[in-house]
Image (tube, rainbow, N blue to C red; front, side, top):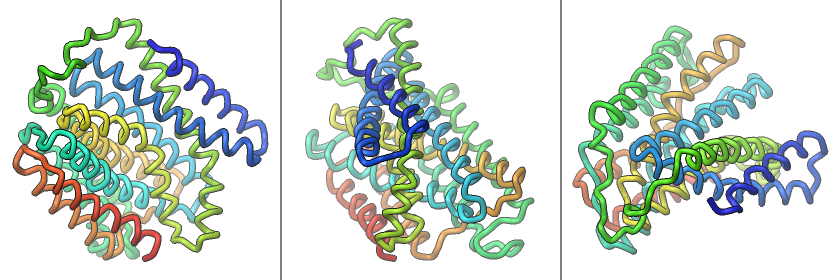
Length: 355
């Protein structure tokens, strides 16, 4: 194990502790941003070490679960601190996560992977069901509240919230069983003889355990520093006159940085199957775990919860799903598919800033 991935998480955690004890001045804010970026790179390194030890798809599942758990903690802490003003935070963050993954992460992997390798392959037997589960969960959580009649304003009634929360969790659990037990072979990348990483000896159990601990420290540092910097982000959003939904996008962008970098590295190494495992697994975990947790907290603390999207956002998400189903429908990729997805992602970012 090289030295920088060990010292970076420990240094970032120490800086996070410092920010809790001292006011956030300019110098400390700059250091926090630098530590956040370094922690992302350290998290990617340790996630790859763990993945190499346990193999696919367990390696990508570890990263997705770790990031989602901390994302849930961040959303819940902001909801409890903000009260009714944060009623739409979970919706904004989950919607941003879905769009970032379905059009941004997959799009950049398709484009750069296609530019480097011309054409890449993946197992459609696993990608199809995973993508279908993501579309189903996103529709239940973000679209249906707009059309139900039991509650107004894009909200579910308490009974409907309970049904959606339980359904989301159950579908995610079924997917994990499908991915790791019943049809694990659907998510295994095809070994490339030219890829030296596939022949590298796996790390020892001790190294993998150390990397797992440092991975968790890195992710806690990423999310903790993001929370420390969130008041600055909210101030900048208000000063720019941008919609408050931009805060949810910023949270999702920061939280998904480790997975984005890891997925891109896999695509550039001609392991697009690993990129898909990361992207789709993260989207499913984000919805399947975030929604039940948020529903439970909203019920316990009597907090309002708005989940329904605006018409513009529903159209963009539907467009991303349609194009994604076409791109993932053949088992082969090319750069044009990525370019189309990135145009949708650019439209999502632009229309979020200029609605």
